[in-house]
Image (cartoon, rainbow, N blue to C red; front, side):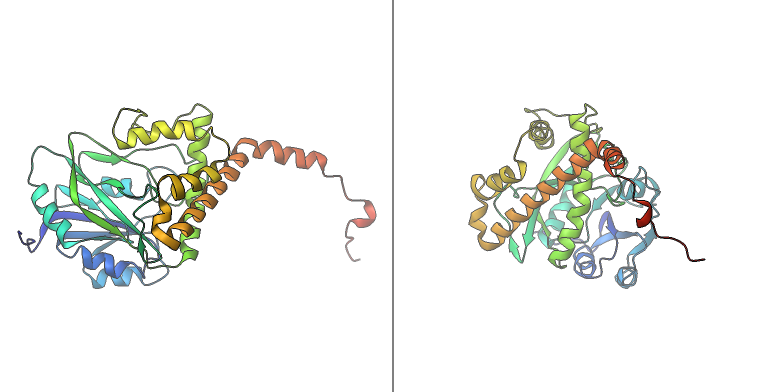
Amino acid sequence: MNSIPSKVPVSVLIPAKNEQENLPACLASVACADEVFVVDSQSSDRSVEIAEQYGAQVVQFYFNGRWPKKKNWSLDNLPFRNEWVLIVDCDERITPELWQEIAIAIQNPNYNGYYLNRRVFFLGQWIRHGGKYPDWNLRLFRHAQGRYENLNTDAIRNTGDNEVHEHVVLEGQVGYLKNDMLHIDFRDIFHWLERHNRYSNWEAQVYYNLLTGMGEGGTIGANLFGDAVQRKRFLKKIWVRLPFKPLLRFVLFYIVRLGFLDGKAGYMYARLLSQYEYQIGVKLYELQYGGRLNKRSEVDTPPLPLDAVPQADV
């Protein structure tokens, strides 16, 4: 087996905010990259200090509430000295075996990018079933050739300043790497719930766009016979119109896709995904009827009787 070069000519981009628990392991896993940028959003914990201790370049990102978000802004503005960029979230790890593969892959002139397969861990266990694996993500590409799509989710607030489930649109051919990237979040379930509360805002807007004919706004189309992302987009257009989606999501994950084989962690993950789907539905309802409901509440709420109105002291 070939050894990893002392420095792989790849620029790593790590978006961060208050990630002091995850950053040490993440940064240690990318130490062989030629350069590492941590793009921070004014963290209030030790994230910046930790990043600097590991030799990363720290850049602050100030979100204006509109597109572009953090990753696209970074791709447009950071002074990368390498042709290839690898995007790694703070709760992800690049294994030595994957680095060896990356060092060889970037020498192939036939590809402008590579999909990495993500292995998700939950409560310390690999969630191998339930449709969570394989989980292909386009994370390694020639940075001049790829940008994240805009799915027109700026209309809803509190989705965060980082791309959620947007995909990279890449010019040229794409390959697939064999070794897995690890997704291990060292934070507790509180943070999982907090993060997915923001994600459900984003998902509700995407559902709303599909139902109102606005589409998803991206440049990756829906195609049943296309690649994995295009098939997923096609199925989502059907999914948003189905009833009982929280129950369906549990059944699909836990039973149809064999999530029960992952034991107690698999059951808990399935229940949380079902709850997540319910949150999306409630927020979608708010988007569809929120204005009408607010107007109705103003009409239906009778004025307070005079003797119930607090009087100023004189």
